[in-house]
Image: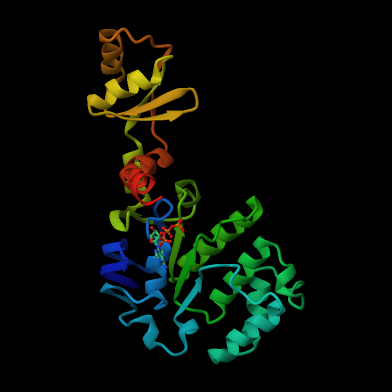
Length: 302
Ligand SMILES: Nc1ncnc2c1ncn2[C@@H]1O[C@H](COP(=O)(O)OP(=O)(O)OP(=O)(O)O)[C@@H](O)[C@H]1O
């Protein structure tokens, strides 16, 4: 179990993580979601003792990760698939990790087999594709057969076959009773991967709930509106408290009924070419939930 309590990280004037509290439990895949720059990587690095928190605490199975000398037996992680010595072979890389953690040598062959890299074991990592490096990173994480696994954007750069394989692997690891914590900035990636979600924005907790609970938010209907006067109508609807974002030719509106939108358009002589309702996707629910933090980043930090 990973327990994060009041975790804060400041870099100079930037607060990357702010008073974050959540728990990641075993036996399920927990997705760690947030827009770019939300503070996911910083949080994962603090869990792994790679960054010192400015405030708060984080423990893995009751102790700070740094207090465990043979760390790979407790927590396996993949933070950056490129962070490997390109001149080494896959087998040499894993053997060095195994030696450092006093893990039996046969585990190297086992994890290579598990991730489908047996054939490539004697090749230099420098010649690996991103997908192969991701597989090697996952092999490193599995090497110590740890109860807790942490992956930062593990689906990045994988082809559809690779994505399916990773999803099935995560599900199996969770079914074995392990804690599996996986970050992503895309709801679509987590939709078929995670059981539980921790959502952050601007370094702060926005939601910690099951995918089913999150889906209930998605059940809120949105109204699709087509008009040649999109900027004007957007302003009018926002003034009535609606949230509006462009989706191709149409505006997706939440917070107002189709009837009310039609009335507002009529009152201001705004022509409507399209007006329909639909259930929001999980992606929309996520975007709506994190919209404020994205705007903040776009305006103030980038
Ligand atoms: N070493 C650092 N020095 C200064 N600022 C940093 C440092 N590391 C991260 N930040 C800032 O902290 C914030 C959170 O960054 P972080 O990389 O943790 O976000 P993230 O959610 O992982 O984003 P992404 O999906 O883009 O990787 C950002 O505003 C970033 O610019």
